[in-house]
Image (cartoon, rainbow, N blue to C red; front, top):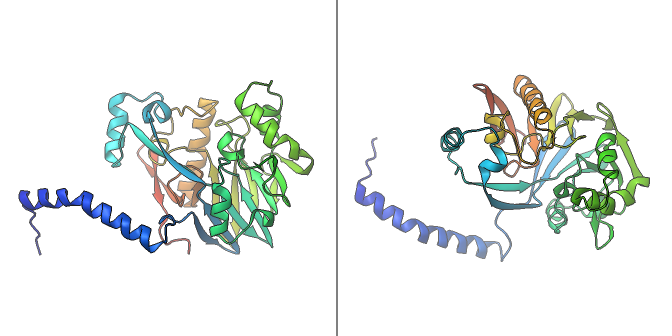
Length: 310
């Protein structure tokens, strides 16, 4: 059967879209009794592990090329954006910690912005902050350590803490006045008595191993998960955007502190994920932040998860 859409029908349909969107919004709001329609927690199975991504927050930001397209021409950046149906002038940011449950332990990777979103997302997953056994920090940028404290007290009161030695040592020696160093001093340093410091290849818990991916920060860590023959990588900020950082790993990202090292880490880890067909969770990927990596030209493509990890 062939469907023909006349110009008049197309224009009439387009004119109706804002009304349809408005009606859909009202229905969604009413059906959720005022609660957000979009979920903030999504659970996946990985062998005998349960992995839940937790949406701490999301926001749009202008100036996408300046953030994600260092070294790209205006034409190149616009072309890649158009090919992937996204605007070239803005990006939607997502902030997504992950909860891994294995061997009776609840292990939280990163703590979010510190605006209360992590507690709300955990509540959707049926978990309270005091039930977290271990908090792992992939690195110490503010959007990963902001939720460590609430009103001056540890948010995860019963947890022990884990982070990379290189990462902590770098930020701990910052002079007062450094924005990140000051937040580390406020949110992380008071908890060092309960903290274990990792090197590359160290084990957080059975089946969870640190994977050095330095560059975004001096001691940035990803984490490799394996259970019952199933594998997954918590990639943290290895790749900050699901299109630009994959299609052109060499394009410099404003937030990467060592641009060359970050590019090398992206190529190495994304290449491994693509070759081995291992899924990943990226802190800044569109929620639920999980997907697969495939080679494409001289770069890669992020393939969002659908029902593969049920």
